[in-house]
Length: 189
Length: 189
DNA sequence: ACCTGAACACCGTTCAAGT
DNA sequence: ACCTGAACACCGTTCAAGT
Image 1 (cartoon, chains in turn red, brown, blue, green):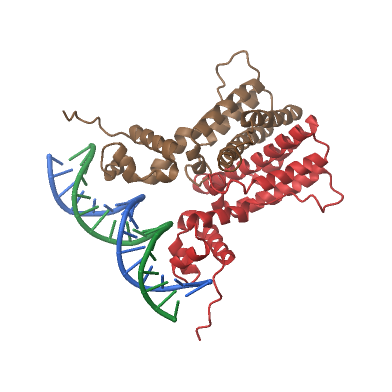
Image 2 (image 1 turned 45 degrees about the vertical axis):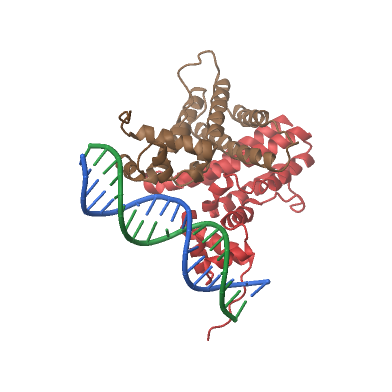
């Protein structure tokens, strides 16, 4: 009856951790609970993630934060449409894993975002922006999206706590704000 | 010799907590260590902050995140100069208390930022923006500043860890990005 | 190689007790 | 009113031991 458990892997561990964070919040993610959810003792995790919880959180960040703008496909799109599509997708990802957001702001895994920034920079470069403007623009776009996701997570919590009448259309606000940055970019080109 | 201790107060507790976070990082802030730094048992803190560590962290956020744009003084400034001044000051504040930044993104104390957002909205309103544009603009500016501060904290950590050659001028990058949003706003007025 | 059990040095918090 | 001591239910992690 007791079928043999499939072996523990790094990926299975990080998936289970993400499920706990999404379902119960970051503060409920403990090594012991994570072990339970994998039907294993907590100490077994250290065999696959020698740096322990630090490495686990790094894995969560990587899973959520790495979201490059596709340069390849989307043939008929100009650079602004492409960036808008990226922004909407990234926003969904960040809000879908809101519990990981605080980790993005911590000192952990500092290279996880640089790949995403580089892909935005590449889009702008191909759109004809000079090097420094592309760097500035990429950082501005990424900053806005991350910052706005942070405000949204807090805003959603505030609404359900204090003022259920006040229904803000966060998606529209996000799009309007992102278009503001795009307009500033287009004017600077 | 043993001079009588000055009595514990909410403000003294939060000040001491901020000093620990700034000096040693958020993870080193424990109730026991905080008690030590105040020369008191950890349990005494609960008498002044009944909601415990939750209330303590709320206090830290309030101390850092509340930074309204001054509408009153700065007479000779137009709205863009005023917002630039606000942004530089807020960036300094956030980077000076980088350890508190992750808390800003958490579900805690969700009203701490709304006052700051409202003050930006007021600046834009007085500059002649219609209501909805002022709301969108205020959120976009605040999102950018918070998001950029997050990227900076991570970038500074990355630099000292990996590539000490790569000296990015973050202040210039911040100003250029903020001006991008301002340009988008000015075009939309 | 992969997992377990017991142990260590911590946490936040409650609660009765002191002054 | 303000603080303390002891205790409880947790943490992350190490380390020797099992298979």
